[in-house]
Figure: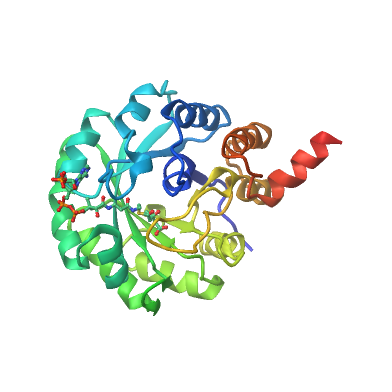
Length: 302
Ligand SMILES: CC(C)(COP(=O)([O-])OP(=O)([O-])OC[C@H]1O[C@@H](n2cnc3c(N)ncnc32)[C@H](O)[C@@H]1OP(=O)([O-])[O-])[C@@H](O)C(=O)NCCC(=O)NCCSC(=O)C[C@@](C)(O)CC(=O)[O-]
């Protein structure tokens, strides 16, 4: 089995991880979490989203959080942007990367961003153009690539179509998301193959929620295809407000532990990462949702 020799993890904890929290998480806590993640060696952090605060109140402090970060050289800071209003606000906070986010399912597109897939592409086109004109890298996330909470199974052809549409408007990288964590390895590989019809292997990443405990094995299935970029969330935080019942992303700690065991370089210090996960979990008054973090914290406690 030939695996990639290095893997890039984007920690989406501060954004995807916290967006669904009911109680407000103060900006200073989010900023400290970002600082702990960068100190642990994360090279890209998805910090926040410039969406409507009526839709996702938890991200209403986007500008404050971005302004409060002491940026570390070599670390990229990305933010979600759904439309031109979001882009204008995001540009002021100088992200390295923006993420436009669509879906392979019509129903999810309507619930999440209040428009059809075709309308979303029309909205994204000037966003992509505006960001790229400023030299900002544009990633596209495709939600519900395996299953949708409203439509059920999603065929790979639907993923391929959205990847094609995103490519046509200049999106530079595609994140293939299993929003509700229903995927199993072959289904996830099929969704990835659909995206790879329009994007090179270096421009595709995986974003797996862990609802059914499949996220790590799905990550492995992608590694076997040569995919080397993944989103993950410290302490397994998160979930999408418009995907009821779905749990957080695969825990960054679990992915790092697996990759260390496989001899694949991530540049991440697992001990420091566990500290970051413990910090935010303590704040939220719960245990980290990571098997590796739990085991290593138990070991630390003796
Ligand atoms: C897309 C919209 C804005 C459309 O929402 P809309 O209501 O159709 O938008 P609108 O253009 O009609 O505007 C309505 C109001 O929102 C305001 N507004 C409009 N845009 C913005 C903006 N950018 N920033 C701040 N305010 C904004 C706008 O100014 C107006 O304010 P009002 O006049 O009523 O006072 C809305 O549906 C929305 O914000 N949705 C966000 C949903 C979201 O954040 N979901 C979670 C992130 S996606 C995710 O988690 C999945 C992912 C990426 O992780 C991958 C996976 O796992 O699947």
